[in-house]
Amino acid sequence: MRLTRYTDYAMRVLLYLGARPDRLCSIAEVSRAYGISQNHLMKVVNDLANAGYVASVRGRGGGIRLGRKPEEINVGALVRHTEDGFELVDCGDCLISPACGLTVALAGALAAFMAVLDGYTLQDLLTVRPDIVKLFAARERALATCPG
Image 1 (cartoon, rainbow, N blue to C red):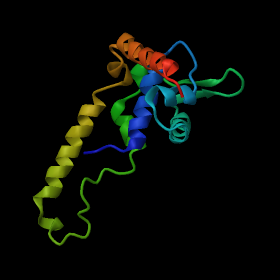
Image 2: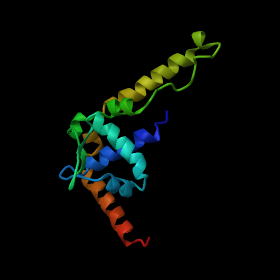
Image 3: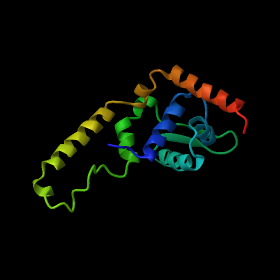
Image 4: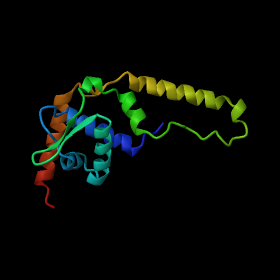
């Protein structure tokens, strides 16, 4: 199973915001921290805000922060929200699909995968928050000292 870049970015945004619960952050700041496109993040953040995962404060001094407590953000639910579909293979036009055991096996594998993700919250992923904050700070220092 491979998750989309969209889901990857959504998780990155939530981890970044979760590591900074005491302040508003900007999309540009998150983009710089991960070295990823600000344009892509804007679309992801807008979707996360519409779904209530992120709260957006407009205007001067505005920014984004978590829209829910980290312990209320279930990883499995987020993945279901950000992924379009979970068909591991397209069995629709396959001649043997009505009699093939692969369909059942893949459905079981997907159910097991999602069950594991359902067992985690954003809070669980942030259990070593000080280490996450230190890694972001090191990246910010490195970017500040690099010319260009």
